[in-house]
Length: 124
Image (cartoon, rainbow, N blue to C red):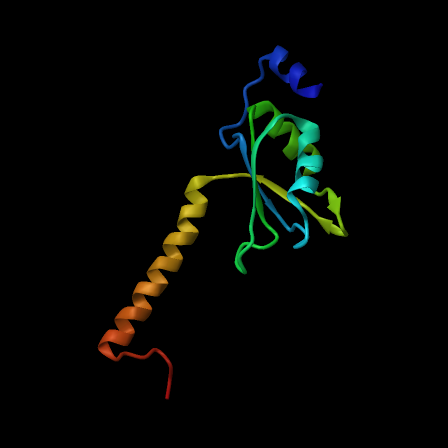
């Protein structure tokens, strides 16, 4: 397997490489069995989480047992065609994801403050 040759060469991996992958542009009707079939070809999978809410449909998190298997999966599956959709496979980066949630939280706080004090940003 390709991951074995990576280990033997003792290659240094870039800092963004980790075992958790973030997958976007999935078909909404994809099943977990299909995900295991696609991603399981590249190594042992610890967990797959498929988004089910309105905001997370078409996305998933795939957690591999080994970091080299995750790297192999990203290398081979980025741009892979599933049901006429090209997958976007990225390494999960906690800092970037938390920034998105922080932004939403701030917007909600601003809306609550505007409502509380009767301030409107809309021109009347």
